[in-house]
Image (cartoon, rainbow, N blue to C red; front, side, top):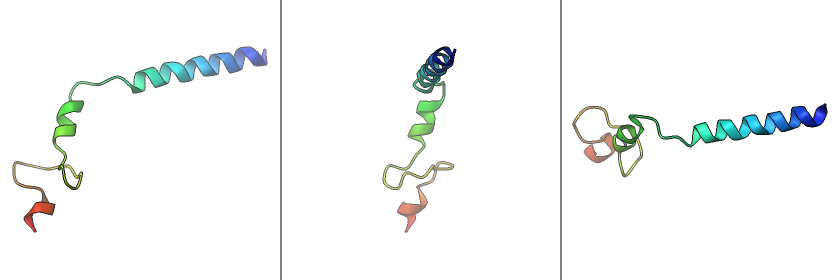
Length: 53
């Protein structure tokens, strides 16, 4: 009985890890919104605060 519980737990963890590797819609756009030098999200069309000085 304990072996079944452990096996089901491991299968569940494998399924959750497969969901975590999926790329969701809009994720690429969020990655492109980050500043390349500091890594913060840019809001609006202006430059990042790290480059303004």
